[in-house]
Length: 184
Image (cartoon, rainbow, N blue to C red; front, top):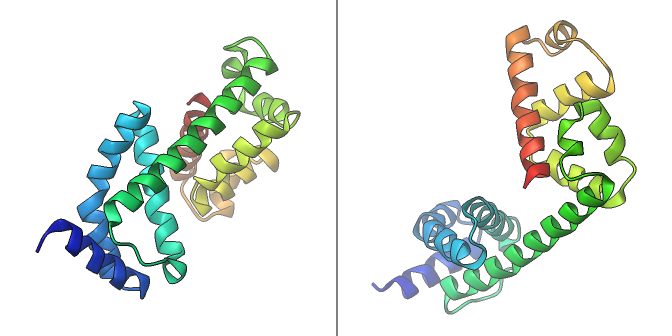
């Protein structure tokens, strides 16, 4: 069976909510789509992020998907549009951050100062919201306890039934994700 037909059959099963078909389609097309995305935007991380968003979207909307003859071509088009939106958003964020101060000033701030500065710019607020959506529920919870409620790591550990080290590592990982989002 040729790939085009196999992808079409998986797509049709996916449309009915078949998780196995979704994962099979994901396995078959993830790397070809990431490679296509790299050729479009010349950035592996962005291509991977956009490909993840494409697959997340098709699973979330599987009930409303239309019939597609060439699934790979359809997903490439979808990916290209997603990449263009991401690149445009990053350009706007970069412009806003450059306008907020000297190029590197915001990266030298403490996290608290950074949050205050972010609140003054609607575009950057939107970026922060998107970055926070990339965090797990637990990471969001601990970030809130640390930076909005002002709790110490000991208090956070006690309140979240974790060790101090786990609380610290969870917050550290969350901050790495947030910094990566604002640095890209």
